[in-house]
Image (cartoon, rainbow, N blue to C red; front, top):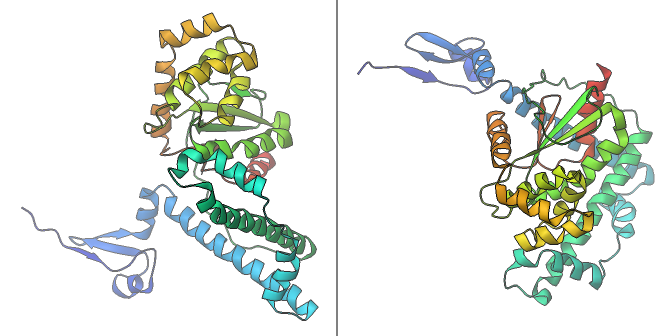
Length: 329
């Protein structure tokens, strides 16, 4: 076997690179240099994007801290005292009814844990969530009143070619922005993304076309039948009404429930049953899964905004940033 000599001294342009290889070098293989530039190109821009996102996250934290320090100094109090006055005082304690509602909605995930045992944890979680929301609102006001100029340069946008196919859509075909979501009706994170999707459609109206494609995960046993049922509901012109019910009942997607939901949207039961029994949409769903995997989708929800990928149930501002940039073009 031919002996291969590989020297590795740096990752992502650390000082050791310039000392040992000079400039852009990352490794030497049998006398041939592999450069940082080649690594970045091979990774399809993912490294630059990850570095930018890490820096952006750290920058956002530093901006928030500076704003809090300035506001605290004006009031002649500490940052902790400021947060206490502006955030913690405004947060109400969760009621027993609110705690019970969370417990009931997630019973199957709690196993044999009783309500009384989990009550303190649920209460703490609800209260912390309220603190986070209150703090974000306070910081948003500080940012509105401050002069902030961000000079961090984003890396070139990486786009993935993803087709709409014949998937259900909302919005005009000639909309300047297309948002394609690969979803799983049983995935709780997909459920959490519904308010954001609704906000996108409400905010941008005919400027965005929204496309929903199937990506039922293999470990969600009820997902595939639910996706099949949604397509069959679509045959009767009720895809969106029926899928809304599925997202709202993610822990109740057994076949009896899928039939029960027909009544809520006024579907013909006989036509629906024949459609489901024929398994006619299995190939369509599998095609969506295959194309999603080819595009780099590994989990749900996954979104593509004019080919720019967003993974997970991200907040509306994340989508707004990209959509606004696309509309400016």
